[in-house]
Length: 140
Image (cartoon, rainbow, N blue to C red; front, side):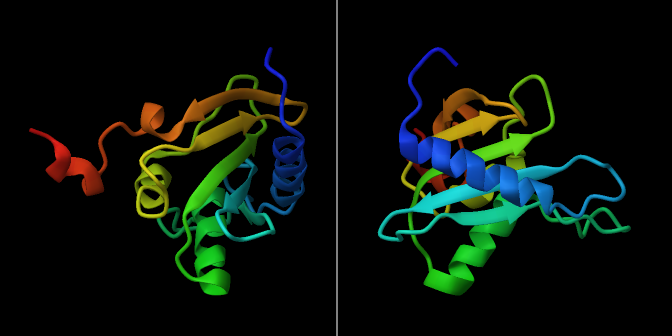
């Protein structure tokens, strides 16, 4: 990334890397870590992917972090998200995670994507999910 990365985002990136190291991914071997900052919550909330032999019961790192935050703090608004995966190119959250994010954020917030060595790209939420179920009534 060519832009200067804020210190708080670098901290969240390191937090996501630690979560990634705890991933339970014996089937795909694809470890993902996430760190979410919520408004009015001082701490970062980590998440890692947790796979299951049935595959459908697998939970992504992003939803893992979000669900943990609800259990700890109740429904809060997302301020930003950092996701890391062991890939060379940016790997954004899946559509299911993005749809879940839509219930917990403003219509736009930054999602930083990284790999094991650095942050690669910053997307805005609406770039990745321009239309979600919660915005369907906003269309003409």
